[in-house]
Image (cartoon, rainbow, N blue to C red):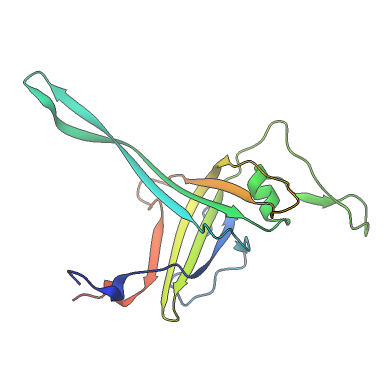
Length: 191
């Protein structure tokens, strides 16, 4: 629909973030449940999710003009930034770069996570879902990516620990999309 329409303003009122092994297929539509491989990362900060797409265009300069004659697309960065607020077997390894949590002794109730000296690549698939009211549902899936930046983990007596990450999309293969949006939203219906 062209022009002004308040019916097309979206607020990501409630949502969730999920991770799975790299290249795990996301749901086929917005009515299908996420598969068993997808792990919900739980609560996130009220800042929600920040999705960023940055394209780098290199100018082609000519002798005859002060302005570029054309641009060549040389780079595309697609990142998702968020802060997890739960500490568990899914969130801590995701924040720290992979690995697993183990119990120190059988039935001890004491668990251990070791930060690797030489970390390995920890590729994952990332899924985001949010709703606006009861009938509008959005899903966003990055089939392959990696945590490329983490924020400081603040341990303070008057605030919750936040595990802030930046997740960057990686290409699967040339013919596959970098990411996919699925929308149950009447705003996209042919007008």
